[in-house]
Image (cartoon, rainbow, N blue to C red; front, top):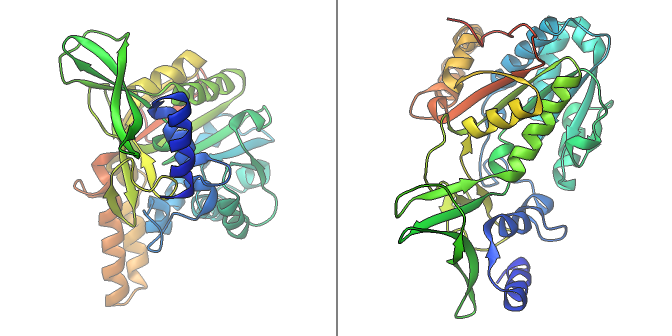
Amino acid sequence: MTPLEVLISELIATDGPMRLDHYMGLCLGHPQHGYYVTRDPLGREGDFVTAPEVSQVFGELIGIWAAGAFVAMGEPARVNLVELGPGRGTLMADMLRTIGRVSPALAAAAVMHLVETSPVLRTRQRQAVGPGASWHMTLKEVPQGPMILVANEFFDAIPIRQIERRRGLWHERVIGLEQGRLARGLSGPVLGPEGRDGDVLELAPARDVIASQIGQRLSRHAGAALIIDYGHLTSAPGDTLQAMRRHGFADVTERPGECDLTSHVDFQALGRALTEGGADILRPMTQRDFLLAMGLEQRFQRLELRADLMVTSTLRRQMARLADENQMGNLFKVLAATSPGMPCPYPFGQT
């Protein structure tokens, strides 16, 4: 048993079965034993790889998008450049390098704010982005003002609830104890919408709160937000909760605190929360379409001009990983939100 499994088992023995969002919150964020608190989970030595770690080109194209958003918001003299869940700081570092080349005005105006709860990852971020950044535990701590916000693979790790329909009734999915070990189960009936037996609905109130906060900020000050994650464009029943360990799938109850727990992002629900907060949202697209529109192929072609055969082969694998339809290209979606009435940053709204 992991130390966190012992703790969770004791809580369940005392208080009864635990809702999934409570369980996920402890697994990922417990102050002593939480997954993101105790380790750097990224890269070959970790449990998963994100797009910024695949290639610098990803962050470069996000930097170009940020420069376009800066122009669309009227080039304010000061703008908060915010990243939620910055990982190792790779994305922000690549963005900053690119912004310095393509938009000196944004480079001069930007004040960097990184929202990160992990002390381990904060150390890696400081090494990557250098001086001048401020760190925060939540978005609420970031000062008000004009803002360009980026969230890549952030919302998938926000805890969710699941309800399952059986015999005409919805039941909350919970974590309980079975022969002294953690096991998944169902609680008594709960309220839910119409559905069919066997349906599983995922509810993400914590995601909605954060998205609404972003929308509220965009409604008060000029700005734009770019959200990139794996998920689905329209709300639908389904069980997408998964655990990852050492680049492979694990059971959700396996070794709590040592596995990453995530679920697919419902972009329709996320967009609704942004809108309710006061932002305008732009029709989301796949990561493939976004990156190709931003010049992915052209950037890799330029890199290949200076590369030998071995490096060229690596570059092509990286581009395929980011944009191929059977890799990240279609699984990941990109959603942009802006202040009401603000011009639409490219490539959103293009036909």
